Length: 329
Image (cartoon, rainbow, N blue to C red; front, top):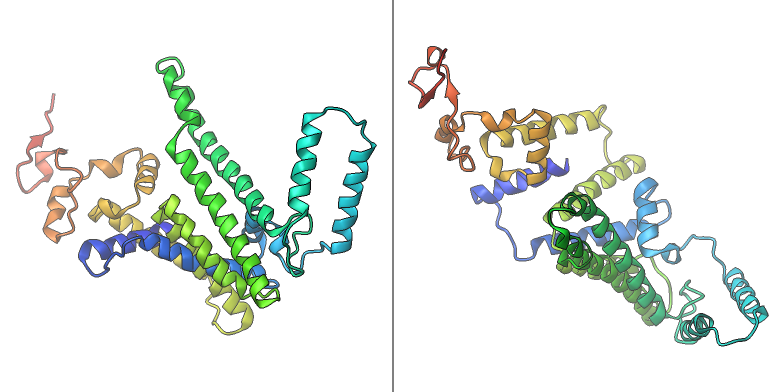
């Protein structure tokens, strides 16, 4: 559904029926993030992988129903301090730094409704940024490892680009700023309204979506939006407000495949590049050897990316003499 939705959007843009907005993918992501975070904060709002992924990103402290009581938190803090006191006192730099960080994190403004009991609101946001920035940076590095090691002996200098690459920092900045903005906005609203409300997640999620400016991706925005529509559909079925259609998932998959295959033949430029490569691998390149010039009569620009391709056709089965006929031995 993600590829089909994105393809339909690009078809609309190519035909002029859809007007693109500047930073439209950012606005779409803001709206999607606001709804996702609202469902995340609601009881039984999200389940399965989506809930686990959001819990990993923003932390369990933002879940109202998590079993993390203040008493248990302070007990853990006291146990940690006791363990540190039991260690021999010496010029241990690591211990001194840890003690300094703990004192900075624990002493500071924290609202009574905030559930990050071991950190104040400022350190809570900073730690969230550092943690997810590191995760995003490492993910992007791991994705670039295969291509870097492929050129290990021919171009050893490319190994440096594995760690010092713009995309690495972009993904890290995107994830880190998303978490820090969401947590900071949630804490701010708790201070202003003096309560912890699920509606705070809508505002915090929308503002956190601005982080997409660091990592502009229409694919991510369209994918999350399509998954959100699917989530809302199934939640509507559970609430009894939306009718259930038997085999709806099969029907949606069939329609999505038909849309993508239609675009692959008639207007390849509207397909996502990664999906086009997938179709080429799936068909062993046969999608690329079609005579698309005869399809230009339909006005979809079928041969737009295949201007230099001239198929070799058997003149016995063509009405017009082909430009490059097959030579028989």
